[in-house]
Length: 284
Image 1: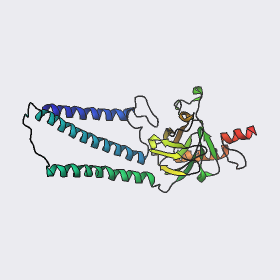
Image 2: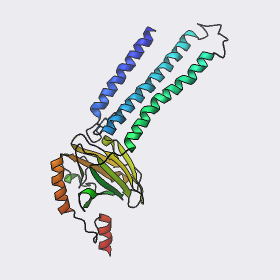
Image 3: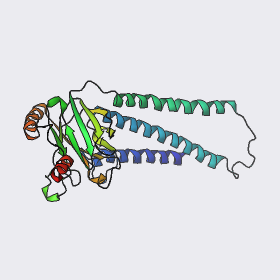
Image 4: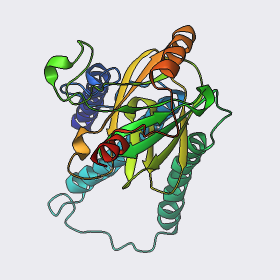
């Protein structure tokens, strides 16, 4: 038993160490080298996802540890050398009740927080801002219906020499989606050609963008910064080059950006606004 206690203590220590390293390795708004756990959370939904993941991980670890201890006890105390005359006991009523009731209780204990998290994700609160993200092969088009008639395309910066110092390779874009901090943002997604998927790990959101259908999700970023995601649905040859970049700024800075965006990307419904439409117009 002394050996078992030492092994258990070592396992707990190692698990805590890995959990701590996971926090260190997980980048702020982007993947990082040697990342072990989630990216750093920036929304209440992602906070709850991390809590549920940790709760579930420790629950499963405790169950696995309990089973391991039972197996070791059986191996030590009831092998042929230690127990040459085995017991013939069968149909233990209490054991059968326990191995039926205990798993049910475990599943209920997992289901309750799982349903609460699912409700939090799917129940979109009253939004302060709505952004429509249209997935295209292979870039995103963002529209701000609450802030005037303007929309813009967001494409990967392919030339590494043109990246800003704060932009990572294969994730930096020419035009970032900009939202205010501490505001509820409703994201409407659709696809212009094939199925795409709008996913930002630090926000805890991932939702399909399907042609002919509008899906919705939401987030409330609690910290300023740039947060990255990618299309997570296999959508063609340049699927891996379709990043998402969301810049979270202060409310005043967002208002200034909106005014600049209205002038820069003012939408004229009579003319094509997207890269694909412009190319088609040029061919004609």
